[in-house]
Length: 133
Image (cartoon, rainbow, N blue to C red; front, side, top):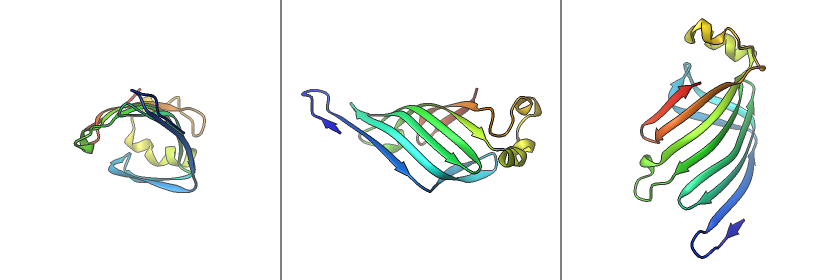
């Protein structure tokens, strides 16, 4: 839906993709891509901000939820500012695969498909910062 207010136009939309693959520029837990059975998102474009109200992806390796904002840079997309939070719920097989790459104390209370791992992504597209909570 497009709303043409005088000073603040807004574009909103929802989409679903099935199936899809997410290729990472930098491997995460020695994994360069993730495959998802279903991805659904609720997005809005407001004042050069891409607002991610809801992003849910379900797959065989993990489930992913993200929300937040991407401030769009008119001159250089690599300078788009990221302010995202989310959670990842690894499935049992994926947890077994990555357990040697994550500290034992971190995984002690995590069980495949039962506990989400929260994260934040800050910075820019060219220099993102990723942290686990």
